[in-house]
Image 1 (cartoon, one colour):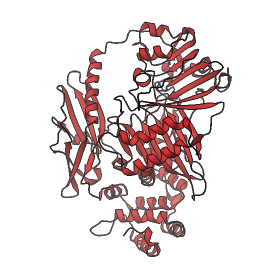
Image 2 (cartoon, helix red, strand yellow; image 1 turned 135 degrees about the vertical axis):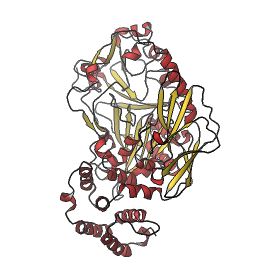
Image 3 (tube, one colour; image 1 turned 45 degrees about the vertical axis):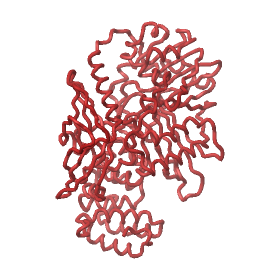
Image 4 (cartoon, helix red, strand yellow; image 1 turned 60 degrees about the vertical axis):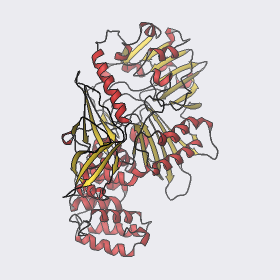
Length: 614
């Protein structure tokens, strides 16, 4: 038994660690892919990247100014690609800052008709001051960009950009380069397309630092071409997969004796397999129920909040070949769409090393390692869900139709800064008989929605909203009349005739008083870590006086003087903020103290002209 086998559950990596910027570097660009997405998690990511003080998800969500500044600083450097129709809905209404994610999130579709299923992060960090070489980080995950608290696996690799291309990276380069071309409906913004192309070029020349005892790392991608990759056959096999199909498993265990084959999956999936398939695995395991619920101890702290591990979501294929062990992890399940037909877009990484170092299949599943969270599968007869399965299939088919439809929301300005949203579709959408469709603006919530009986090129009113609540995101509820089954999700639309003042309206809603304004100014000017900690303390009801002082003007003045002698970035941020908060008709703003405005005009007069926003 090895002291540190590769899949040792004690080797834990928090999401925040994967995204943490190395000392002496700034985030330059980042691309993420995910199957499903929720907006709150997407909002937390820029704040986590911008402020190392962001310890967990809920703390950050409770601090809207930190969310705002994270988005302002980094949203243009982050691109997230997710499966069209798989953004989670928020029936009670989403955070208004969701509007600032409109150019960050691009919905895509798998080119071969399956699911867009890869989960990865590719980050580029630039040295502060511009001296030195940029760094790359690659993270391959089994986790989506959501609050799902399942058992997952991740691989994080740091690397440098070499002078020559490395064939090892070619599959990943093809995936990253293809992303903008997979856009469904609304195309990826131009700046995203350029950033992704730049990252793909650097990725081609990446040299990765190998984890301990790993002799070779290989990458593979399915779903972009007719070529389909799957793990190599070995003399021993271990499969960890929450979803399984008979055909895929039969391909994987070919030539492996039952006593040398182990399968860990969900009980409800194993119950659907053919007896012959089950008989080919001498060891059938499921996650122990005690490991799927809270056990009285505090849940693991992650950048996405304190959560207990629930359910199995990890995917891994372990094979022993000669004296070596190969561990493949990534997004793909042991299913036909992932491993046989190549319909799904999937990404994999295979780590190779000597079995005495990486551990054998038996080592990974031993009672001292993963085995202590597992139990032997006990066969049972599953409930008859034929009716529910048929209803889900009907809704899924219509979901795909909607996800592939180009929708447009046109804004019409009305009195009192109200916007009337008009919805239309590029082509007629036929709503199947027995399925009802309800749509709503995602920030307003389902109570502001409408039941739709036809969707086509003809515009129809969707809702009347304050400008600050207008986004391109539309909440969708499908309901199957026969079974009562419902599905909620979010779709993106093209947003036409949007007034330029929307971002200003969102800022005015968040910075509702002078105290909030001064805290935000301090965040723009001060040490990022300390200012962020203060903001998070305020978000939790803490006292700010110890950080900001009882009189705000003096420390702000000192920081403004320091900013003036620097590169001017911080003063540009203040100029942007003040211009947005001012009323365009009166040029005044109640939340900005008059004393600060007078001080600001003094600084503005001596700022370099290229820093001003006249």
